[in-house]
Length: 444
Length: 121
Ligand SMILES: Cc1cc2nc3c(=O)[nH]c(=O)nc-3n(C[C@H](O)[C@H](O)[C@H](O)COP(=O)(O)OP(=O)(O)OC[C@H]3O[C@@H](n4cnc5c(N)ncnc54)[C@H](O)[C@@H]3O)c2cc1C
Ligand code: SF4
Image (cartoon, rainbow over all chains, first blue to last red; front, side, top):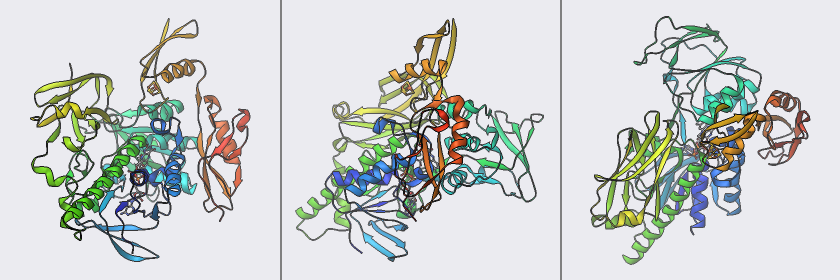
């Protein structure tokens, strides 16, 4: 197997954008490894429109958006392997993968970009003991069945969970002739984008029942009915509020979770809030030269942000590889792997570097990145975060240690939509003693 | 004077708009972050339209279905007519992104186009 400077795990929008930017940044030795039979990731099954307004200034469907990047990968002659499952990423950045043609193989990479995406939360969300009749699907599985296989799972549908995939599937199943009876959401607010609630539910008169959950499912072999009930502030069903719906299909749309088995096994430090790696301003994990971007880092709702983030990861990976080479050259030549590289890429100067920690409190749940090395940051750095509740007419405040430096009012913020602030390098550079930047949500 | 609260669907920002309607006409819109929101509110009140996306049967392709969309917005009350015509139609491989797979769908004057490539089997 050939050696590559940069190996990218996953050929979804994140992996594709990272590859394109790494190539444009001057790296000619890039390999994308994708376990599926085609590039594009989950976008291939997201046939609805609404993608790419920020990136391409037009509204594309998922497959079209993916193809814009696939086309660039092909035009730039970037190498990729399909049907190839990455089995292991070692802390020294040796990637082990397998496919039918090559069998099991290893590649000693100089930098690795993790872009494995996310998967749906398992059925555990359905907190009912006992037998599961046929007819219960995750919303993403139903999306694949309907949009790729052209197979309709059922005619009368109840959806539990108002995440975007559930909302999109409520419309999709309705358009294909099914009757979607309601969408039940445990929380008092929807986890989905507002536009999806308008276009997927309101347009078709599908009721969204907030603070409701499924408490009973009926049917021996195949699902015949479900009972939903309102839940109180303690999330427990309120007696007397039960409603029974006959249905043959129950879709579960209970959120996404980053796919990080490989990262954990590699020794990448994780953020318990995002279930994704902890990264610095360069989107680099605690293992120098291992970068993360896209849904594997934190779940995004806009693929545009995935592409933008991945573009930065690709550029930073090239910087890292170049830095490692310069370092190795300076050290007298032949040490191009292992320890020499681990020392390089800017981490060597960590002792005197100005590193600032980012904290999220008072309603802000997390930030990406978690730390900023001021010397290595770009002139403008976008920090993304999510809030833990719905906030109306509240302020996003940014504190430099105890001093409030940003205070922006927002009409509405909700857990389903990612927020961002932009930090200027000049602003940080003029404060050499700054230790912590805190993002908070304040009422006034 | 009538007031209507809308959520702009022009982009995933989902700005919350308030449209003021006087004598059946939108006279004022607020809450939009960009001009698209103003246009959307004026149109959504008077003449709502949507893009429809679905899949169409492919003959002789490496995949059974090709994803498709209406090339531009169609009137909201025609959504199901458009779906019926898309379901009744089929297309032969190969198909490229942007190919018209069904012209003038449901008398709307709008074409249905492919949104992915399908090679021959
Ligand atoms: C079911 C589902 C539906 C979604 N619908 C929408 C939507 O409608 N709109 C929207 O904006 N976002 C949607 N999302 C979010 C969507 O994932 C992101 O917008 C975007 O696709 C994220 O890009 P990504 O490259 O990070 O991840 P993905 O698109 O998931 O790509 C990750 C890729 O990595 C590959 N991979 C993973 N592990 C390995 C391995 N070990 N070896 C080799 N390859 C591997 C996967 O096969 C996949 O191709 C959806 C997500 C899911 C799970
Ligand atoms: S007003 Fe502009 S920014 Fe806001 S949702 Fe509409 S199109 Fe998007």
